[in-house]
Length: 99
Image (cartoon, rainbow, N blue to C red; front, side, top):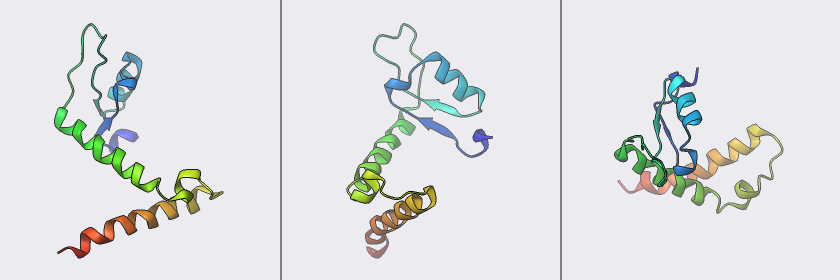
């Protein structure tokens, strides 16, 4: 079950629909989705958790600097995820060597 693996679902305003929020809640996951501006009864969301979404978006943008990741040259899922892991390690190494 997905609720055993994740704690919160971080999404932007485009995912603010009752059906989506109900499905996420039914799976036992916290929906961290800000309400659209035109919503009559906005649902509250955890602003501190929503700030983590920015870091995730920046990570994906940085990973897409590698052409191989952005265009998905790899044929199999395993080889693609393997290269994403290598690219992530290359991004992570400078932070480890700072100390």
